[in-house]
Image 1 (cartoon, protein in one colour):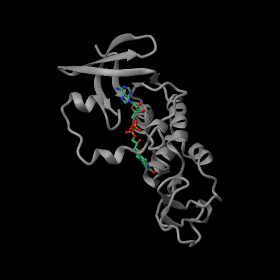
Image 2: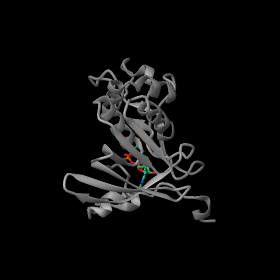
Image 3: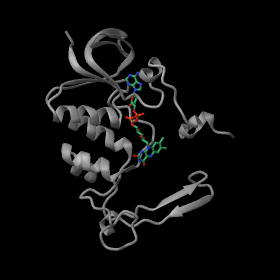
Image 4: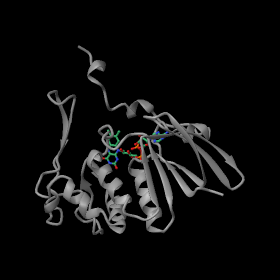
Length: 213
Ligand SMILES: Cc1cc2nc3c(=O)[nH]c(=O)nc-3n(C[C@H](O)[C@H](O)[C@H](O)COP(=O)(O)OP(=O)(O)OC[C@H]3O[C@@H](n4cnc5c(N)ncnc54)[C@H](O)[C@@H]3O)c2cc1C
């Protein structure tokens, strides 16, 4: 018999939102995320779109996300530069979110939604989604655990996970395993699904030691 109906590999925005959505529907889940709570993601998303904000409203955390993002009176301009103190390549002048419904020229001001897009870093989004997911009954989040692989049987999947700090390995049985483990997904690779597209576009983060002198 399965330990839990759904196992989720990866606790980025997608895995955490799935855990919340399943919790909202009364379906228990077990989520493994290899990063510990104190380890933020690399800088990624900075705009959460209207459709996502609508889901977060349904799931009950839209207000908390709004309170944590860019203040309503702060311009949301975008500049494209070669580096922070480098050359300006181009810019988009966008009004503050409080001006959105006031004909101020915002791209999204006429959108028929109660939740317009919101400027907030993924570094701030994830802890809010994590905390909110834990308010749903049946959501079990294990941080510092990596999914290493799985085997499929009739109507069931066995997931191999390791608690990274202690090297403790454990198997869990579930009806479904969902791979929310990002672009380098272990689950995708084991399923033999290839990544399509130009992977160098994903290289947005360089450590100091990688920088040319
Ligand atoms: C520079 C940049 C800017 C972006 N800007 C935006 C934006 O403005 N708006 C927007 O909507 N999107 C933006 N995106 C895209 C957005 O960041 C991604 O769509 C989003 O992160 C995808 O979420 P995810 O949960 O699928 O994957 P990820 O965020 O990649 O999360 C996957 C998680 O799985 C964990 N994991 C991986 N392997 C395992 C394993 N084996 N076991 C356990 N855990 C594992 C990882 O630690 C990670 O936390 C941007 C991306 C980049 C790179």
